[in-house]
Image 1 (spheres, rainbow, N blue to C red):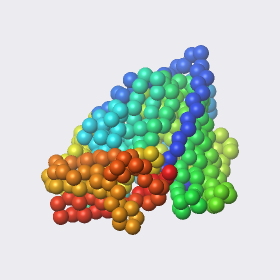
Image 2 (cartoon, rainbow, N blue to C red; image 1 turned 180 degrees about the horizontal axis):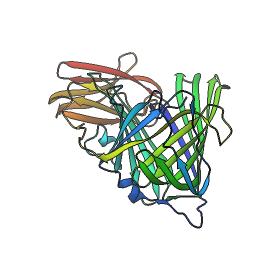
Image 3 (cartoon, rainbow, N blue to C red; image 1 turned 30 degrees about the horizontal axis):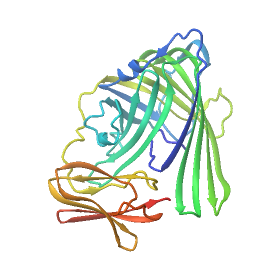
Image 4 (cartoon, rainbow, N blue to C red; image 1 turned 30 degrees about the vertical axis):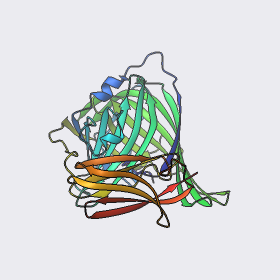
Length: 374
């Protein structure tokens, strides 16, 4: 089942089709300024996930009232959402065009932070990528870089658009891989007032019809492994963006469903009182997985240094033959990113296949494997 916190990090191809059928008159309009006004805010959401919950999502159309005050939580989970400038976040250097970061933490469950980087213009709301950072001394940092148009702006009643996202996982190169395709039809099908215990909000209601299909391809033959569809509603407002959401059970086709698989609503909102300082000097040397991986024609390699040190970053074949030296110098503490264009020391393109990249920093040596598809 699709999680509401994005655990991404597979080789991703995204195709988006935007269709806008704007109403002649939209009572509520969400603009790029509204989205950027989230910067500096902390929003707390309480959610129920992976169960069976009674939920009345109300009706589509104009001037509706959706009263969600009487809904009771059974086993809620709390998520804190912090909106900020990209500066100071874990992987800001990977997203130079970002002008808003959405950070999600679950303070009562896991020591982790999930970041989504956005470029918001007057016409488009674009997700540039996501990263996940684990604390607790774990050497874990995962990054997914994309360029997905979430919607055109301004957002208003009557808008509709479709997105298609395909994630490919290569199991055996040139022989066996799987493709998970998510197709979503998005419609702003209503506007009106959402009533919550925290207060009333003027909202647009976004309906999402999503279908996920998983296909395995073995030696050129495709076999469908699974297919699943859901209906979701999200209530969007100017000052907090999303104030409530609900998702149907898998396979649901009735837009007026009352049996929800999960739901959530806004619990509190205020200014960000603490800022997660992700620009601190790293505690230890780490070598991150290259992205994209597999890659063609180029990939990026990131590594962290807790202090200044002589650094070597080299590429080897799977048999240990040296292909190219990317770095051989003294480097300052912090995160560093180096690109490799799949060429050897002579400037020749290498053959397709697996390669090892090796980081030597002071007395520490770390290696990882990557796949070049030619």
